[in-house]
View (cartoon, rainbow, N blue to C red):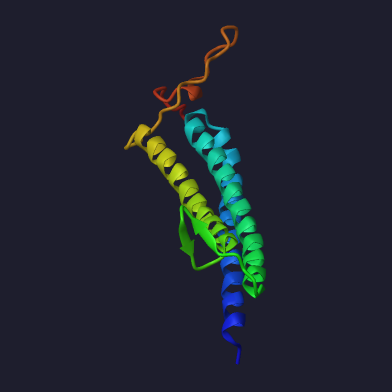
Length: 165
């Protein structure tokens, strides 16, 4: 049976994997959607939001990597016998300072994921709010006829159908 240290190490490893997966997966999903948004001028605001969200996901990935590195240094700090206590504004903390940095980077990665989703959500709702609620059937205009050729009655929808021989 695994001891408490191994169990905590496994949980920490899975946490880092999860942070990398959610931020990396979000970036890949939006990058796949970006070309479609860039092709339509009415989706320009959504395309900008996608680009900002991809950047935010990248920041989340960087925060996850920093968290992983700080977690390793935190583990080494706990192994020291003569550990210097961490204090902030005169308040002595129970964990080493690097451990608090690691936790901060972990939460920053989660916040980056949520912020990226909110950016795209708000832009998407704005685009949907601008689009008409009910689309009406579109009747195509008749194709213009060259003035030198005789008009073709089959091109006009109101023209009578030719009788069959």
